[in-house]
Length: 344
Ligand SMILES: NC(=O)c1ccc[n+]([C@@H]2O[C@H](COP(=O)([O-])OP(=O)(O)OC[C@H]3O[C@@H](n4cnc5c(N)ncnc54)[C@H](O)[C@@H]3O)[C@@H](O)[C@H]2O)c1
Ligand SMILES: O=C(O)C(=O)C[C@@H](O)[C@H](O)[C@H](O)COP(=O)(O)O
Ligand SMILES: [Zn+2]
Image 1: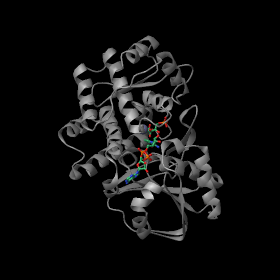
Image 2: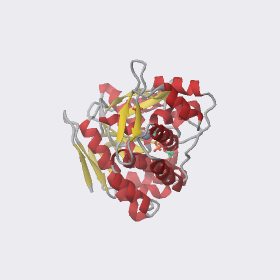
Image 3: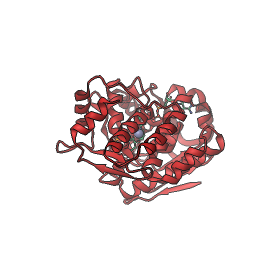
């Protein structure tokens, strides 16, 4: 199955959802990965890739390493491998590897090509597609980065066989995000089917990738519609930041954030209690957390202003409208948000 993402300026590319085929490159290639993924799958990847010169860059595993120091490690590997402007980076791993490799590719010698071979559910359904790249810093999540599209994305769900259950759930949160915001039929399908059943996973990947490709092809640089993909993230990013990227996986924080956004949507009459409950039930089916005790609501609220979607002292929220549609708004009163947060 191939999903095409149509973009201007020669940035279009294909997303292959199938068993990984042999890849051959007549240029120098550096594969970026981490010890966990390498331990499970690097030998297999090596059997699939040939290149003019092939080298590897192994970075530490974890969201807490998605930072400037690790980015420099990747750039140093590029220099050590004497990559030139025709060379290629390969992101082989989850969203952390993908975001950092993409960012390194966007700045190495002012920009070289990269491809994505995502190995987590979250990166297969979301992070590998769309060209958002970046790193975190002490001020917040993904605050330094670029838009740099991959040349191709190769999604092979066989890699998921070694993925821990909790990581799988984190990926499902982003799948549910796509369905709640854009596709009520997909949501109904998710309620009736279990993604842990192997026969369903490629369907869910395909639906999610098609949804994301559609959104990104309309709004590559997040000037409008693309902000909807941030449903759950306005809250989730604050949770990740306040817990030092250690307590919750990204997808888990997004799951909690979706519940916060839903509570706000119910308060504002955009969603019914019953619809809110259906989303919560679906998250719980995969053991995705749905609550987070906020110690200091004022402090939590102040963190919203670090979000890239905030400007002119206004915070942008993505609120579901029922199930299958959503609204992007910066007109929400602070009192309404704080009341919801206090109730959590
Ligand atoms: N660019 C985007 O559009 C976008 C979208 C969503 C999320 N993200 C980013 O993605 C990151 C989260 O990605 P993630 O959930 O993939 O986390 P991750 O990259 O940290 O991977 C999760 C864990 O799974 C391990 N792993 C990866 N593949 C494995 C496999 N096949 N078998 C066993 N273990 C495996 C990793 O080593 C890691 O420990 C966050 O930094 C988030 O901000 C980016
Ligand atoms: O691709 C997008 O656009 C998204 O918003 C996808 C999100 O799942 C992802 O976590 C993204 O990185 C969050 O947006 P950011 O702009 O705050 O980094
Ligand atoms: Zn996300």
